[in-house]
Image (cartoon, rainbow, N blue to C red; front, side, top):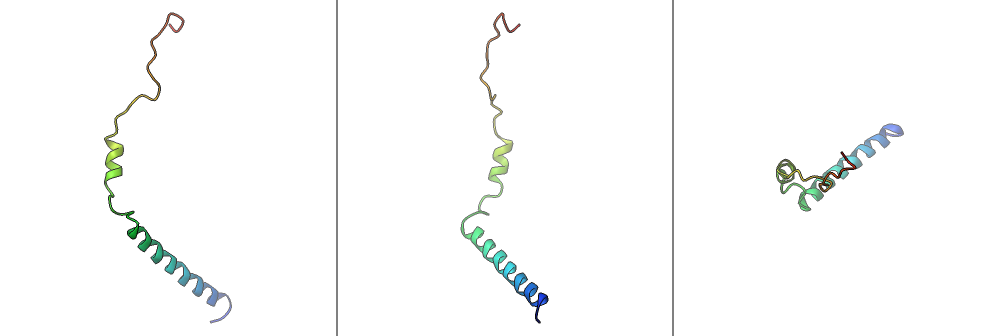
Length: 61
């Protein structure tokens, strides 16, 4: 294997190694600990108004 095929074979091996390292790093750092918490937090979030309520004055009417 020489030329472009050897290079592609080497490159695919490097990519597989990077994927395996990335998966183990994410497991070790706790990325998969709580998969449902953030999704439920978004659904149960109170809808607070972004702007404070203003009273209408005679100019606004």
